Length: 112
Image (cartoon, rainbow, N blue to C red; front, side, top):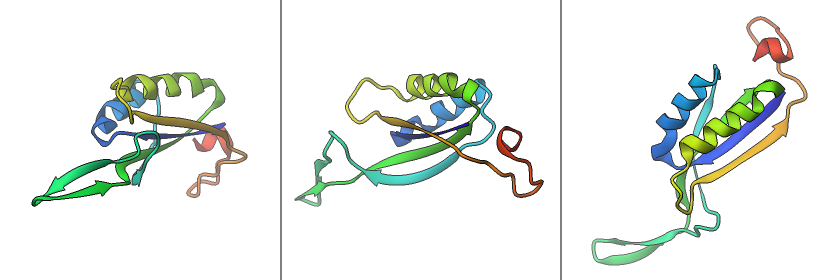
């Protein structure tokens, strides 16, 4: 089992959600986050005053998947979130030791 964490642009959330549903993902956790990478923020003008926005709004998606779904899930996220411009985001994949469904006590792949 793998945990896929993706950081994407906020306006791409619906596209990514639809792409994940098409490949059979049943559950996603979404968090609004702020951060920066190579994009390094930007300067904005507000009421005549210029100020620097260091942390940009992003969306963090977390998806637990079976090993055999990993490639389809990462490809779906990559394709749906890509704009071709800086700041499209990143995908992180890590191993999951154990998954437990609280309601039923099911373990691992059965709990996904």
